[in-house]
Image (cartoon, rainbow, N blue to C red; front, side, top):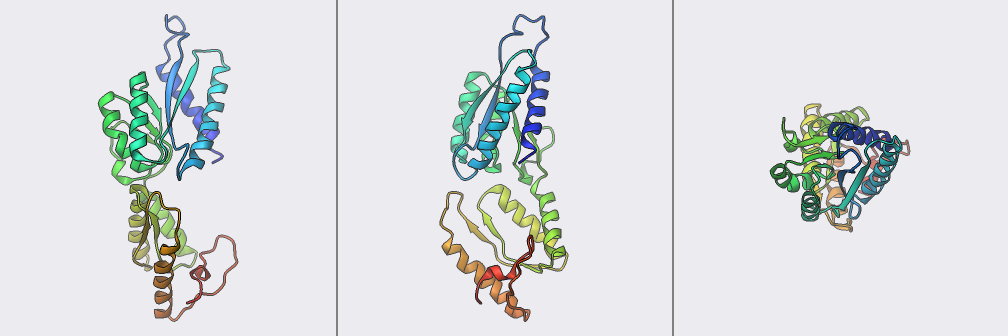
Length: 245
């Protein structure tokens, strides 16, 4: 997350340059309001907290230049699509037209119709769902879509020695899209992707998911005449993580 402060500082500066009037304007001293639709609570709260800190630092840096002041209006999505829609509605009613966020693709999908109807620009730092890669729409995204991520992740796993993957994915558009993209590339390279295990977006107990994942991995390893062996090397794909077979 070290890119957040310089990245968001540059982003806020560009937004400011695009919408701020010249110094001769009668509204030159009025604040420029930018919305921030962040996951300050919920499963993505760590991203929201660091982004809030980065945005506040960015605003301080820009306001220190002595130009038209910028104010960030924060709304918490709660890492929940319905809450994100409610937060965007409040920003819309305040007259905000440029919003940083939401982060999760599921929330971007939920708020997109309202943002389009209101002429609002959304800038999402983390959304990756390929379904949102629409040319000329009102969404700008920092990260490559899940199709590109899947190619890179599958290549990394295969190069690192993995030949069987058991996907464990959060049930949302971004993660399921990544799971599909990894499967296509990994199997094209000669690997095997087993039946995915999917957990809920609000789930915190994963005991039920551990059983199917371990059993699938063990069956596959037995079929190939290979049982898990410990591997303590950092960054390696560990067969030992399956536990006793």
